[in-house]
Image (cartoon, rainbow over all chains, first blue to last red):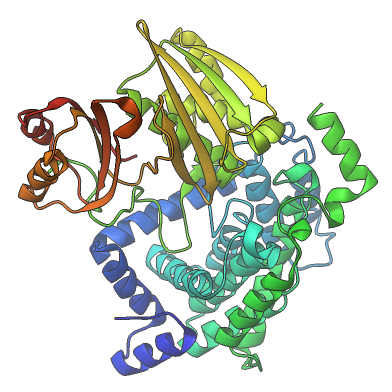
Length: 290
Length: 235
């Protein structure tokens, strides 16, 4: 049994009549030599940690380890409460939660890497809020997580999900693709629509570099989680409306790999290019690591 | 079979890990936080129990960025055998003080030869013994211990149960040891035998796919020429 591409996944879904989530669970059971029940139980634990990270992440006080963020999501929460944001209620909540979880990570909070710690706010922020909005239960949410997981797997197998190898397009881009697929799953979409959503999300992250200030997972990482959580919902909305990605998911991954190979190391998690070499960044780095 | 998670044999050390979701971890960084916790745990597993005193030398990127990644806390947390998702990790330095575990930190500009940029050296004091362990965090939470005491170029990742055997060199000794392992229907995935420079004493490290039963130590110790056998349990 080999499911290593969009093509493989769609063929298998069609052949078996199973949902993408069911196929993902079956495949992971085969890969890890663990029972489906054990996998589902563990994913429920993951979901619990995601919920906790959202809750605790919304409440923390002080500054992140590197001092570059100090619970500013509360500012956005205030505007949400006053209904003064331009983005609708759902998207603003998503942004607040993404900031909460990503900044909680930078305070040594407990999070779920998805696929990495730097992008940990994207999937839970979008998933939990859409789930709440649609009034769905644990089973549908866990299934959506397995859809996210298999999407991330396909990207990891055919390109890379590491910032050091592929830049932020690989970390946050993958997180956004996983999230877009998961959101479409919550809406009961067909496998092809879920993978379209993933393709759209990933395609619009191509070229995103990893140039963090002072090599820490704070700037631009924390706020970027807010952007990409919303970005994933945009991708899901497009796909759910029937808008297709002209470049299918497998090809977008080829493009990801190609782009990654052309990216200089200065823009791949070394802080030696882009934002990392600005005057502001240099000053922050100097003060931090003096 | 040891009573651990049912994923033995798959090399998956952590039930909190799926294909791209997971692990559940304390942030902010897989390499500089979670990886550091694992290195601490692996060092502790190698020496067999909690040390009384540890000197920690940070190299490369660990040395430069440890404050912003909590690497110092993570390393100590690992030495205290906290797992990567333990919410006590940020308090590890205080916990160490309470347990009278003395920790000192040093930074070193010069990376040990051939080592990855995220490298740490532990000098652990247990009774009158001093043990040296050098390990690196490779990214994504993967770690590797490359030096134990004077034995270099090792590849101990913490993903698999590992046996360390101290023995006298003689023809057939490796065969005899691996035969015992085969008797338990266990597959070897890594074997490093260091003999030459130590004169007549050899050190062999063997990592295996499946979890090792405790009794295997007794069995191996009955082989002629075996001086000592100890287990490094997978993380």
